[in-house]
Amino acid sequence: MKIEHFALNVADPAAMADWYGSHLGMKIARRGDPKTVTLFLADDNGLMIELYNDPREPHFDGASMGTQIWHLAFLANDIAADHQRLVAAGCQPVGEINTTAVGDQLAFLRDPFGFVLQLVKRAG
Image (cartoon, rainbow, N blue to C red):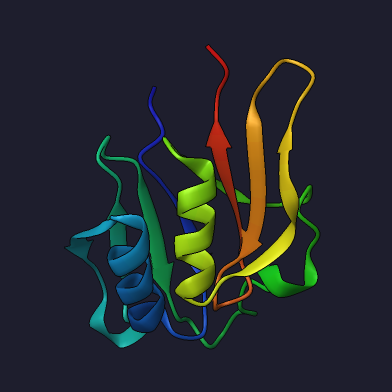
């Protein structure tokens, strides 16, 4: 089996999809139920994030969670440049760019919706 998507119930799926498309290169791969503004965003590999707004359930509150509870990681060729670009696009940095004991570079940010993003540049 392969992962097809994971889903988040969010306050404004259209705004989030627009920002993720403009700044993270994700594209709307399909549209679902218009009553809940369901949008499926895909990366270049086809992995999808479903964003929807179902008022019957609580919205995902990424802003209240720490970086190690939940984050969405993106590969970065130039982590410093991508970090700077995303801060200019409205992200808030969470700490500094760090290098792990095995040489991976990592940086955490909160997107304009409060969700934690991680930038990753793997060693070797």
